[in-house]
Image 1 (tube, helix red, strand yellow):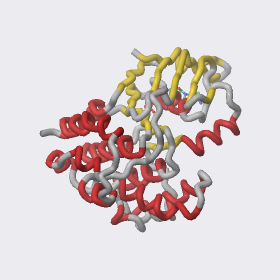
Image 2 (tube, rainbow, N blue to C red; image 1 turned 120 degrees about the vertical axis):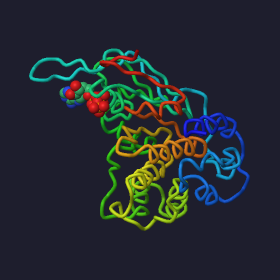
Image 3 (tube, rainbow, N blue to C red; image 1 turned 90 degrees about the vertical axis):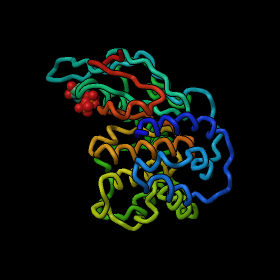
Length: 285
Ligand SMILES: Nc1ncnc2c1ncn2[C@@H]1O[C@H](COP(=O)(O)OP(=O)(O)OP(=O)(O)O)[C@@H](O)[C@H]1O
């Protein structure tokens, strides 16, 4: 059985799992069985029992869209001339979905992702995140929302090079204003979830690319964001590492009730998405 078949099997079980309660087994059990193994050996395991072993985040998941984008355009001024990069984007992201934006280089994926994360604003159109009008909010208000409710993952990991995996994840809790007494348990949980409990005290240069990206994921989910945005998270990785990252994404959707929207060039990972938006020259086709 190939990797994609494995992912699909897991994907079919995940919606049922989202609504189930924890079996009470330790979350460390999952990390040992799931992420730290080779992607092929995932096939041999019972996906349902693995996921049941992970304690669920106790957030109540609404069925309302996490993100609603309507008629979004973005025009930059380049050398005094308008450059129309986004030309009327409309999309919805539902809770606990894995949504992919696919398209050639220059099609506008990163420009759109920046707007979904409140880093930039549309020239025209509306972006609603969890009931908040990102297209109307000022910089400070968007920054507050972003810090509390959105996590970012980048192609180049964006870890602090002198800090260990543990300290990198802890930093994100500090930035989000999470009380210090909660740090230890949450950092350990997030690093176990991504299968890095044995690498907690390694610094980025002591980790492989895939491991660094898993630290970046632990860091991005530590403050329990509703939405995770990932810009080409597998672009630097070989296919097996990319498969592990996608397995981690499926795990955190099931256990942390996070919603993920990512960009990709990689056609081999599209099959795990709940929805794929294909972008060509600033529009969805
Ligand atoms: N701040 C900006 N000012 C002017 N032009 C910009 C700006 N940001 C993006 N662009 C232009 O918008 C277009 C789309 O860029 P974007 O980074 O969104 O594409 P992309 O699909 O993410 O590409 P890639 O896959 O290579 O990252 C490009 O032509 C880029 O030069």
